[in-house]
Length: 366
Image 1 (cartoon, one colour):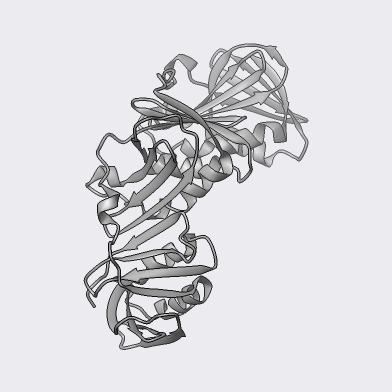
Image 2 (image 1 turned 120 degrees about the horizontal axis):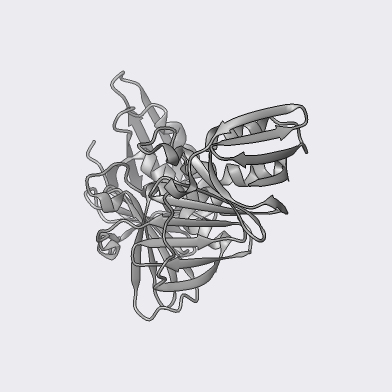
């Protein structure tokens, strides 16, 4: 196997797939990337057995073949080469020699046959969707995923397809984020899949914010997203996601309307003196006035007063300020509407113009 490639043409795909290569792994070959030659050039594959990333690199090949190379070392070599340098790679038996100018590196390889590859997907559903919209769906909801929860189905992002479009939902049991967009999915019945946390993070890193379309394929156990240069495949979490419609607060008779930025800044300032462990703040509502208060074990206090649109009864309610800040940070638009019922019920946060994103936050006792 032999090929010659410019540093930048090799570095970008390596950086795109390196995220799934674990620094510590049970199988030594998982610390390597699979390098294969094709008629069009090179295919680079990285996996951690849960997520697989495949990058295509177009170039002329001197001699075909396949091998696995140490991922981090290969990336570091490319990264430290001078800009626009040429790199020549030659593989003979168990050694790979890399030459660039007067630099020479010899790397140990492992057999390509030892590298685990996800089998071809038996696609149940396939459709195309703008890259920008898929990125937005994930960005506006992924922060509500649980981390290492025993309810394993919460440690991921649920994607739901129906006739009208695609919906992303995440919850950790204390808050919920939902975002939906219209799309021609081609499904007749509603279909749900749960993408694991690691897959969600890698997909978010790979997606560009442009109009180019990606192909989304759903199999029985995997999801695959193909962009022009990268193919992402992830195992799905096998479990039943909670019914998010039951969590959505109904009949909130107390409505706050205000500027999203002002509210977010006020909460951020108040949060500085909240309890570092519980992050609790108190919201006190009166006619067109919102008071935000926080205190901590050191007897320090913070208070903000905002003018808002509110005509309901007086109400005091406590929340984890981090959850509110996360929701306001992800919400599109300049206006925010918060619907409340009483001090023991969840609040619903949405765009002032009834947008396509909704956030639910449970109250906390202070």
